Length: 266
Image 1 (spheres, rainbow, N blue to C red):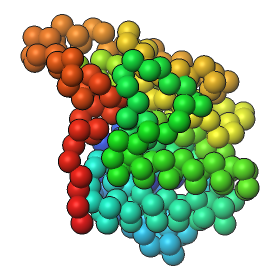
Image 2: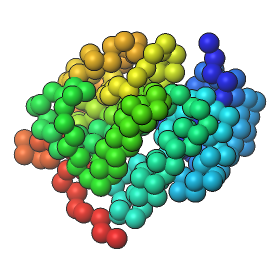
Image 3: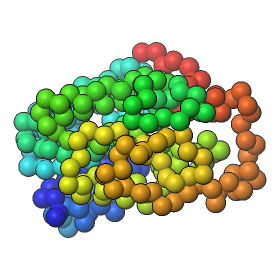
């Protein structure tokens, strides 16, 4: 059964453009939102610019939607002031607008950086504790907590998807473990919005790579089975660059370079 109207926030970003291109079949109408930079609406599309920090505008954008793919907000490490508008205040605005509009299902793009200070050799599942590696990671912990609250208190289902590294192909050796292929990302979104019951699961967004850091068995009922693997790219990466040393943060922590990066001050 098709959704009536699917809202995609962050529609001007890399994942947002991919979702716009590939997920139109999920809904009768796809509403696209970002600060700007979006192409004009095509058939079956609506384009609405929105600053997530503006609650009145967020309510307008959410109204009439029955599901949300939330990709909006800052997607890299920045100062607290830069992160807080979209990832903290804006995230709250989105959920409160969803509550008021009667939206019952959200895919929240969380991040592996919410658990980035776990060592590489520790396999994680949905019950593993948070270990954010950055202010950006902290913002994703906040987002997951808000999603849990709105599920427990108001029944809004959310897939808390801790995305690894979604690019056409892995860009470094760390991504041999964290890579999420575009096809697997699309398949994950389709599974989340078509599942008869969702709840509020943690789902780790990584393809069927040879090196696995994350265990998704607790979310098997959602029906997502990744099909791609980063392994065919290993030889290309070996030829292009040296693998990181044993003590390099990329090898020590699941969050890689985020765990070693300096602190961004306001």
